[in-house]
Length: 249
Length: 249
DNA sequence: CGGCAAATTGAAGTATTTCAACGTCGGTGG
DNA sequence: CCACCGACGTTGAAATACTTCAATTTGCCG
Image (cartoon, rainbow over all chains, first blue to last red):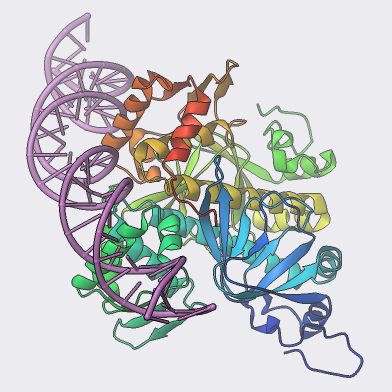
């Protein structure tokens, strides 16, 4: 928790950096220094945060909202390859260029640290460097989770996997409420079109899949972007049973 | 390749560590120390190298062959979420457990470093630590590439993307020969069943997709596991045009 | 209230899965 | 040496799922 004290350079008080999981082991002192070199930026939904191929001079941490990472294809169309939630970091530590472009999927705020001071801080605080590493590994983990979900052959299964991922891996940051006995309420953070793009399907297919799951009683569509999961085990089964490949050995 | 020389602790001389891209900036001296703490292990195709959930006490570097990383699903079936080629590393730096299990997709050899000595070496050599970080980032990159490929709706497109990935990202390590003017010869490192598993399709669909691409003259099937790419641009178009999503704004 | 974007629905065409059968290759054992 | 077997790849045909195009509904904002 960044406290206000006379004369100290707190340009980013209340960023909530202490809340970020991968900063948990970083001493309060270092967090203060971090807060001192950070500038907050706001983005409206749809705005571009960083462009593929550019070499940003900041390391950024998502404070609020959701960003989407996307790759640009040969003919200019773009494909979503991941989402950034609160606490996730992006940017370049080594001056290298970004491999994905980043846009705000909702109104969002990020904390931007200038690269050089940040690197200095990393060198001085092993816990911070460790944290960055942890974050990187967790992103790799998530990317592999996405892969496993994307490889499910049927759209209904991929959608089930998507909802489960929202509950489990993103549960802490995405708006998920639990009502016990396998019932949850999930706020879907991106539009149907974005879901379709992410899950490798058309918006129509996504819509049909939602309603098919709803007809089975596995979910309820409270609003297009607010889903109630009525039977999480049935959902998990849905995600699994598409995967009929027997790589057992 | 291991040469015996009196007295010097070269238990892994000729691992070819110096060849590994992410070790390029590591001084020869450190490489020698690395070689001193490494032990080589061999695996037959199909053997399990590491199991999901286990906490391996080694950091390993693939020296020869290809490993596949796979996640275990609820009912015990497994899903491939990536391949490890020569030079790739896996294992746990912090005693954490593996999120994927690892099996040999072909006969393979790895260089195993005990964790503690390796960590000591990393602390002593910033270039080594940097290299590990670079490797991690490149894995994240590849995982995102896989995501983009997996999200292509048609099997033919995903297969085209797979072949292109083999040429570009894995070109240096996978057996790819170039004959100029867009013609290549690619050795497919995994079985049809594994390709199907990785690409989210059935083996039959993969087979049909190969032959469809061959009928179009875009590739030639020299052997089931040896593909000649006759027109790489047509392949790229194939991979792109499935992606008809207009996220242009 | 009109207009626009997002979500949904319907119907037809296409692609993929599924189940079953067949061919090929490499190894094993008679 | 040859027959047999199993793993792997391929092919065919029917059922299913998805995409595509078009039209309609819904919700939101000016």
